[in-house]
Length: 199
Image 1 (cartoon, rainbow, N blue to C red):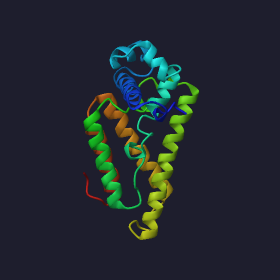
Image 2: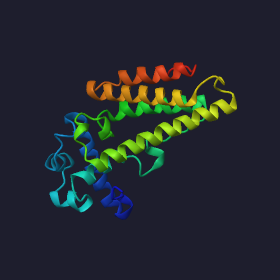
Image 3: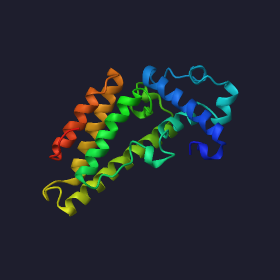
Image 4: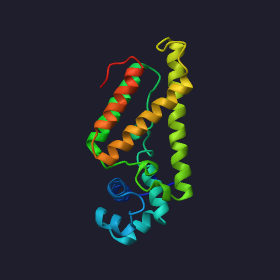
């Protein structure tokens, strides 16, 4: 869907990744509406022809930013093991560590300033990814119910929605404030709800 880098040489993959990372940083700082391909070219230190070699247009680049970590499942912040409290805690701590390390990088366009101007295809894809994330968390909570880690009175569907909303709220505030503290507090709130020690 995003012109995956598997079709390119190792050098080409690195160049493509540099372009995507540059776009992600610009979106994190300026928002989507103010991200231009010329800005990306300057930030990534590539030529216009290189950008168009990897991306047909601005929309295809935005799709790649949404999917920036998705090409290797192990690097995708929305993919993890949610089937136990220990696993959930480890994933949450890694999410916070990732944000501290990258700050502007890996900003999902649906959460960035100016997301109201997303192209329909990009918006739909971003919503699909968030929806899958919520389903994965829900399935994890259901597994915890079956294993006895969660009280049987817990509503897995409701808890998954609250978890995702809390984490995304933390991400949004952290992006706007350029500070990991809101995300850290959101993660702590999720873990406390699971009766788990905070990170």
